[in-house]
Length: 251
Ligand code: OOG
Ligand code: MG
Image (cartoon, rainbow, N blue to C red; front, side):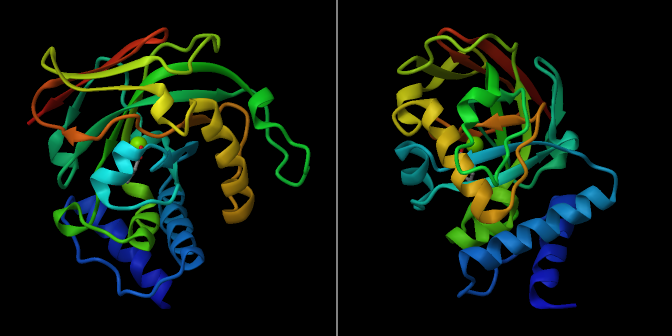
C-alpha cells in the first residue's frame, strides 16, 4: 500500500476506534491531502455509507483563530454522521468531540461543475440552523492544514433543524448554548461576510478537488463562532430568522 493509502487507513482506524493518532508526516501538499480524504471516504462508502453532503471549514475568523489555520477547507458528510434534531448522541463514538453552530443549505438541483456559468446559488432551495460535531482524529486536536484536510476536516456528526425558504440570512445573530447557558454568540456575517458567499467558495473547491454537488445534498457553510467541547449536556444553536436545533450528548 502507498503512503496515501496508509494515511487513510490510519485515519479510518482512529475514527472507528475513537482513538487519537499522531499527525501525518510533514510536507504533504494540499492536493495529496485531498487525495487521502477521498481514499478515506471511499473506505466508508465501501462499508455502505452514503454521501449526503459537503461541509466548508474555516470560513470565519473565529474558527481560523481558534485552530491557527487560515485556508478554507472542504469535507464530506455521510448518512452515518447525521443525528436527528433533539436526539441523543453517544460521546463514546468520539475521541474529543467539539460542537459548533452552522447554517445549512439544501441543494435542489445538481450543479454541473463543467459548466463555467454554473450558479450554485440558484441550485439551493432552503436553509436551516445546524450543529456540527467535529472530532479531530489527531492527538490533542492539533493539526496542520494538510492533516485536517486528510482527516475529512474533523467531520464527525451533524444535526440539521427545520428547512425553510432562504430569506434574509446575512448578519443574523447566532447563539450556541449548553444546558440553556449561552457560551458563544456571533453573527452569520462572520461566515465570509454572508453565508451565501460560502456557496461560491464551495463551487470553486468542488471543481478543484473533485467533489460532486448533487440534488438533495446538505451543505454546511462553516461555523460562525468558535467550537466548544461536547459533553454530557444539551447543546442548542439558535440562528435568528432560521430557528433552533439541538442535540444531547450522553456518556
Ligand atoms: C476543522 C473543521 C472546521 C468549521 O466550521 O470551520 C469547521 C476543525 O476545526 O477541527 O468545521
Ligand atoms: Mg464546521
